[in-house]
Amino acid sequence: MKSEEILSKANEIKPWILEKRRKIHRHPELMYEEFETSKLVQETLTDLGIPFQKDIAITGVVGMIGDGNGPCIALRADMDALPIHEETEVDFKSEIDGKMHACGHDCHTAMLLGAARILKENEGLIKGTIKLIFQPAEEGGAGGKMMRDEGVLTNPDVQQIFGLHVAGQLPTGMLASREGTLLAAAGSLKIIVKGNGGHAAAPHNTIDPIITGSKIVVELQSIISRELNPLESGVISVTMMNGGDAWNVIPSTMELQGTIRSLTLDGLLTLQKRVKEVSESIAIANRCEAEVTFPGHDYPPTVNDVNCWELGKSVSEEILGKDKVIEMPPIMGGEDFAYYTQKIPGCFAFLGVSNPEIDAIYDVHHPMFKVDEEALPLGSAIHVNCALKSLSNLS
Ligand code: NI
Image 1 (cartoon, helix red, strand yellow):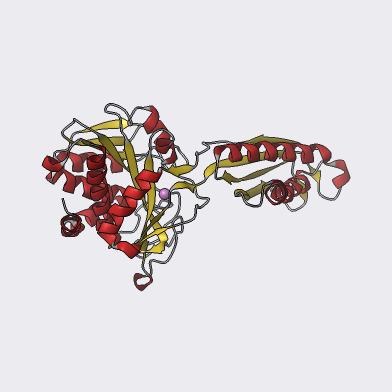
Image 2 (cartoon, protein in one colour; image 1 turned 45 degrees about the vertical axis):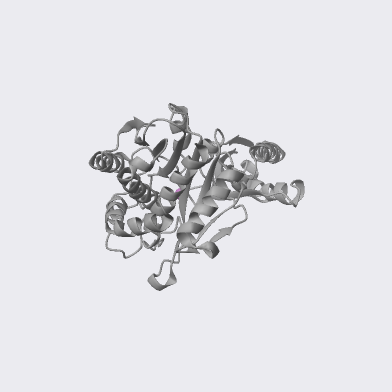
């Protein structure tokens, strides 16, 4: 299939893709609760005549297109939303208070359904198998890991995997990625500082966890500035400080939370080790105790295979135009697509959805995040072109 033909087909079904996206957007669901979204995916695949497996990693769905022989590649979309209250004025705004598709996963799911429709209609051209992976819980729940552990990369074995993420800071019609490390290893941090509370007028009779916690917050910044090679990258951000309920009471405990990031898993482990040592030592020096944990999942870094990025770049240039595909530096965001590329070669790339003319100027995770939907058929077309070219290279 020629790229022009793929693009014109994607533009032809644009209303269908947008309808799916808007329906998902109205009903955002948080991690591992994507039951309605999963149902929509299953119903759509059924309508298209695409066989699928369901209930993988709770709500995950994997569709299969192709002749079942020869090479196998996968295209991946995530389905979960965020606990953010939507503040845009789009007429398909979230109908659920406090939940929003603020990371564009509604678009990812709709773009992959668009690709599924085009691929299924041209199944005769497919030499091999294309797996369509719709996964839950990208936002901190490591849904990608659970999908991987439940075997989505096997039977048949997937040789290459590709994923797209919308980017609120990149103009519509552009795509950006790179070879090698694209996104950081990322994890969360929690510190409970335990002291001994009492009357604020008699601090000498208390052990103040607020002062100790504050010292920990400040001192943790020196790990990055004094211990890390300036040519390497790391982030330690304390983003939550909670302690105390009254202005005249020194509380007994204070809680800190935040995130630690590095471009390598080793780097992340080193930072975690130092955060624990520094926090515990400061607490002891101040007669407190610090309980340091790293709850949740430590996402590995997302590393793009060089050949997969070369392919991703050329198939995207065919759809978008040569000057519309750019190389970007790594960023410290995290992505659970990393769990797939830990096992097999793959490529993750950012697709621009920003357009100041329609006020689509906010980045993902913002309550005003808005997508220029013109980008959606482009995403579907890139998926299709990528899947077909990748299979023909592998066969
Ligand atoms: Ni996301």
